[in-house]
Length: 280
Ligand code: C2E
Ligand code: MG
Ligand code: MG
Ligand code: MG
View 1 (tube, rainbow, N blue to C red):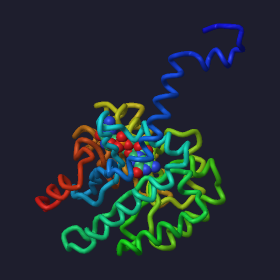
View 2 (view 1 turned 180 degrees about the vertical axis):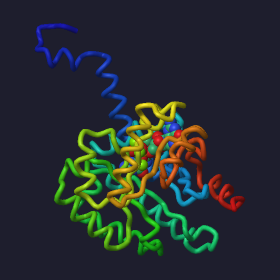
View 3 (view 1 turned 90 degrees about the horizontal axis):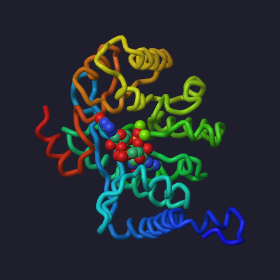
């Protein structure tokens, strides 16, 4: 109500904002409990190589809320980054993924699969991040070369020197680093040549806007990113591949890995295991 209070106070009493704040606060409390209550799981999405076979998977966090059902990581990761919960959350993801990697590495049929794990900037810049990753791999009994960490350009914007040092340390142990969501930031291009990425993931927004015409503007951008990354010695992953046509054109551009609904949605471990055992 617009009483004799100041502007900020009126806004605070706005019932709409009040309800957004209340929702966010509740989500924050529930997220804290979610880990203990086993409401979090990982979904896995295949990454397909040039030979058409599954080369590895990206691990994607899923939260199954008991009353409200599935909550998207796009909705709760930013909250977790804001309140610091991303640190224990990120460690749980890493532990779970490394355990799965170790299981795969013990089976001849799956031993070459890699696993890609998303890492938030806040998590990446923790002073003990490299130690945590190495210890987690060791405790799981997994070999480092099977692990790929997906980061975004925000790690560079937050602290370039620290990003570079950590990347070098991780890569010295055989861990790969991918630049996720390439092309969506303001300065991805500037950092690509300055940092030792192993992989570049072309953001799905480019792939999705790329239409049937092989010479459309989006394809020009995609091909340019591809050429540039390859010349820098990096491999390219195309995200959001939904059609055969997109796959065909990306393949003609020598894209190294394909990921998207055309091949597989992110699925639970059981579904993935079943799919892997019927392959080849
Ligand atoms: P991302 O790392 O760029 O992951 C790719 C997103 O694209 C995933 O959304 C995936 O489900 C979706 N996707 C894959 N193929 C297709 C396709 O063909 N079409 C369309 N329309 N979408 C496709 P998801 O799982 O909702 O994750 C959203 C974002 O949340 C991720 O984007 C990542 O930034 C973040 N995230 C997910 N899991 C984690 C995690 O464990 N840690 C951190 N820090 N962030 C995570
Ligand atoms: Mg990713
Ligand atoms: Mg991405
Ligand atoms: Mg993304």
